[in-house]
Each structure stands twice: as C-alpha cells, then as structure tokens.
Length: 106
Image (cartoon, rainbow, N blue to C red; front, side):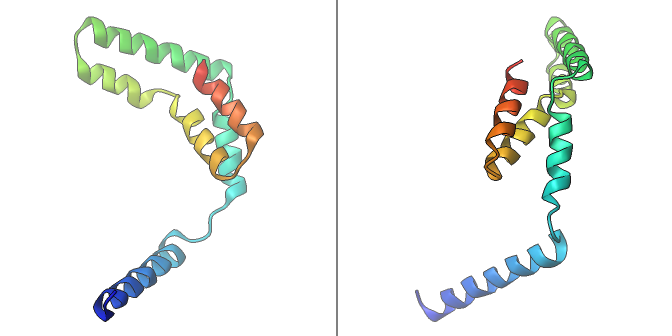
C-alpha cells in the first residue's frame, strides 16, 4: 500500500471509532435481550396477530393487490423471532436461539 492509501485507511478507522463512541453509545445487551425474549415468545397475542396478518394477506391475494400483501408483511409479528434469533446467534445464546427458531416455525 502506498502512503496515501494508508492515510485514508487510518482516517476511515478513526471515523468509525468516533461514530461508534459518540453516535451509537454503549449497547445495553440485557435490555435488548429482555425485549427480544419477551416479543419472540409464542403467546396468544402473537398467534392472534399472526392470524390477522394471514387474513390480510389472503385478502390481498384475492384482490390481486401486491400493496395489501406487502402491508401484511410489514405488520407481521414474524420479525421479532428473526431479530431474536440474530441476537441469540450474535451473543451465542443456544437456548434463546432454539426458542426463536420455534417461534419462526409456527
């Protein structure tokens, strides 16, 4: 690498460190884990929301409306188990990963 490239790489690394320290701040893993654990469990509310989303998506299929189908995907509660699984993988929490996989399967 020439000197200009090394300088740009060093400047980019400095910007990334500054961004993480000043703009993002510290990450509260316990709070994130609690929220994801609570939201990704199979509960009656989760199942009712999933049923309502399925009915909206079915209505979109019957009306041949992609906007309604996309709307059903946006309000779908399936993102919470996916976020929970991603967090469990990142933190290497095997128990939560299995629980979130069950939530995505149903």
